[in-house]
Image (cartoon, rainbow, N blue to C red; front, side, top):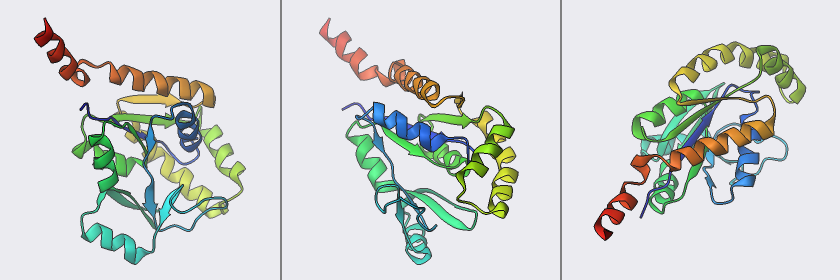
Length: 202
């Protein structure tokens, strides 16, 4: 069976990567979403097992010790990580999986899944990034300042991704992401079994 593709999407807080990913998944029901685990508190409207697996620090550290995470990082004082078992099971079944994670985690995933599809979401400008962060109304001034300070380093990491999408309009970003995934499916390395099958049938 043809293995699925791991699609990894990152970007600075406020770039709109979550909105782009949600719209992309809505247009591609065949692609699974990898739910991350975190120790941060749920935001309004978020549900355990839907948006994240919300864990205590003790539970998360147990998963670290048992090697149950594909990647993990501590960001803004909270742990974030990706449960490994579900990723492996879905890829083996031929499912494509979308993984939305921070740059630190994504660069760690690259070491284990070098053939993954790595996409970085950029805001149209730094001014727009600041506007979006303040427009949320969910973070304190200190948190906004901290996210803005971290954004420059996160954006620099985009150079290590295969693709970069400027999120000026969500529909445009989704269209580009869809094109990237379609192109990856057409890569020769992802169709070697089909090629060999055709050769044998000649």
